Length: 224
Image (cartoon, rainbow, N blue to C red; front, side):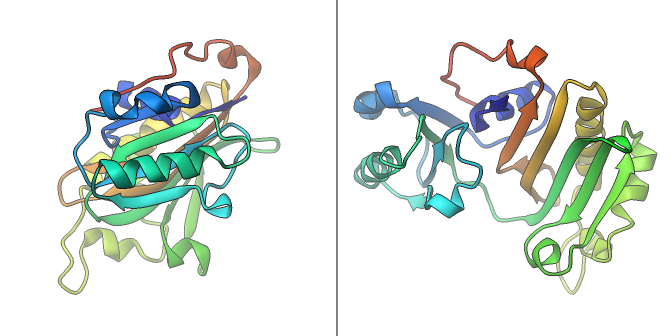
């Protein structure tokens, strides 16, 4: 069973991982948009559906929304996308160094965690590394040192170093999740890393039927 993005982010937040402040607006509550949105502009709006695997492929993301008029137009357009169940609204996060962290229950190796640099590093260079889960922080440090672009994390050509301690905690947490055997696949992509802290900007999760039965009934969320 696939969890909606705001449901995954609620789980991450409860685990101590930072996510943007956001609000899920279901189709049924879209007409109440002006009264239920309590977020600071600019906003990003993303179509939400368990049947849509790539929001970009269906043009399901609007960024830089500066006022209520732009927001209403974006939500109306996104809800017209086939299989849309609602829209996730989030405050836009500052730009940071983008990385990806994922986990999968591999048929051959069992629970595996993956780390890689985002953007062209993963798209063109496949600069990623894998390890068996769960990981300690020391093992997570070894994992991030395996990618070719590791120097970017330490700071490069005037760029500041990122908060590696926070990154290691995220990797350890995701490795723990996947090692439970309850989650088949989880993908945090991208995560924005800052000199202090980090923010998960997008998240997907596929769980087995057991935990799927525990899916929250209340679909609204507001994640500070």
